[in-house]
Image (cartoon, rainbow, N blue to C red; front, side, top):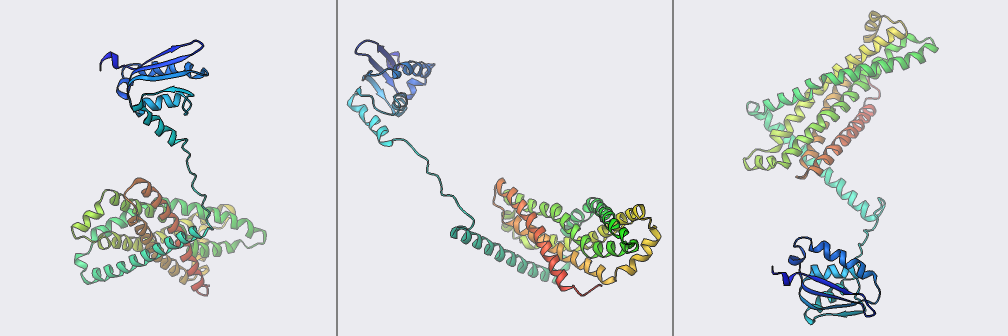
Length: 374
């Protein structure tokens, strides 16, 4: 670009102070070298002066970048004394019409507002219908699997049993043992005041085998395996693997959902037995240290203190809890949008929902079998 097209600014500080602009005030000229910094530094002291006459009649070229630069220096208003070329009048006229931009604050939403309640109702209905549809598809897939077991997804079932069952033995054993120790210590302190030391076996046996064992194993599996299932399906959604399966004619329910439900329904009762055993061992150790109860006495009295029906109730809870955890995890995993934010949010909601449903199911078991096992 020729030098005579470069933007220039001259200022005459006298009684009739005049700032004269000339040359090209377009973005290409302003961006050359340090022109922008030089012009900006020259404009700042001039704009602080009052009653300055601005002469832009010698400006050969102007665009919105140059006009905006001057407009900001003038304090976003036209100077009282301004001389413009006719072809440049439109730039500053547009800037005057724009005015000051004000961001409109969105209205604050309250959870009890009718719109919020309507959205909550629609979301709950959407999740309910989706979950019922998932159960229906699972029933159809189970019928197909029972009809043609040789063509079933045995490898997927085996792999999910390994991941959800075997790999969870360590954490369930540790937590179960510690819960047994804590429960035994707290119960022993209260029973010892009334001379009921021998009833510690009854309290530990009933609470662990009937309630704490299945519930504790289910919560651990929901947080560990449920989140893993949701994240796995979510990543498949993000990577478009689920769409690729449909293109290849592979149904999600038969190859992804059914194996996980079957695997957790098989692994959970086994984990319940394992957690019960670890919790009882922890309680037995604590009872021996706190009350002096011998291991032999504890093992001998346990079958008489806990009827066999409680054991079967615990196993039944394991099967139901395992199936519910897998269904909830798959439900939220399939609803994840193809972005990372939805993946994290869906995994969190999946774990919270699975634990909530497990506790609700446990309450239903308590009501139904309230007269069994005592």
